[in-house]
Image 1 (cartoon, one colour):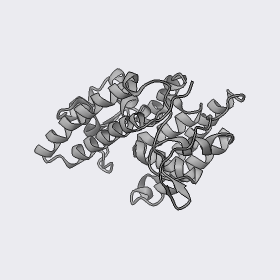
Image 2 (image 1 turned 30 degrees about the horizontal axis):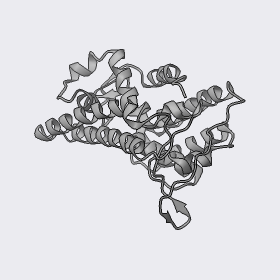
Image 3 (image 1 turned 180 degrees about the vertical axis):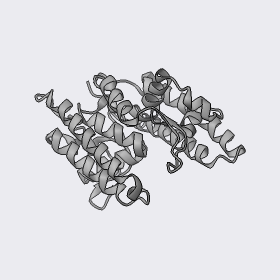
Image 4 (image 1 turned 90 degrees about the vertical axis):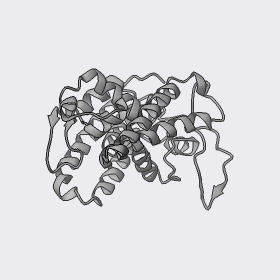
Length: 262
């Protein structure tokens, strides 16, 4: 499936995130186009200053969003509209957490990997309903956070706007089946749930652009983590680990794929 909604989705995110900000109440610190200082350092693999964040260009911000969030959730292979909704969730809370939200909404095993069980649960369901359920699960989780009293109103309104935009994208392709169900994995069943052990790919993992992008992210993340640890930058270290996990998760999902779709 082509990255048909990448440009539209990125524009929506950038519109939500705005420009440079350095709110003392924001634990992320200096931010530009939604990219924090810690995330920029992790992506570049070196320490960055407040001025580096201020001078961040849109082209690099797009590279960060695509590598660390869009590709980490496999958005190129998601149904139209759901790609935007899950992408925005990943930007705010991280790729793993966003996929957990989707799996909670679908009431399937939560392992942070979009594999056969998640895709089977998606198949045949109205996309608008899936998007609503995802956004509801996301909001319910955010309400448990200590900062919700300060940022909750803004978060809630953002989710509402993204939900409307996502449903509009989904409605443009009424004849598209949400996701074709894949064969169930041979993973060990735990209770009534089966863990997701593979993702659906259209080519060998070693030929995937996502794989090589993930390797690049892992390399820069390791460097960023070491620099942050050496400089006692806890926020930077956490951001580097988050990026590292996203890259590893993308590679693991591709490597463990057992079959390709035609």
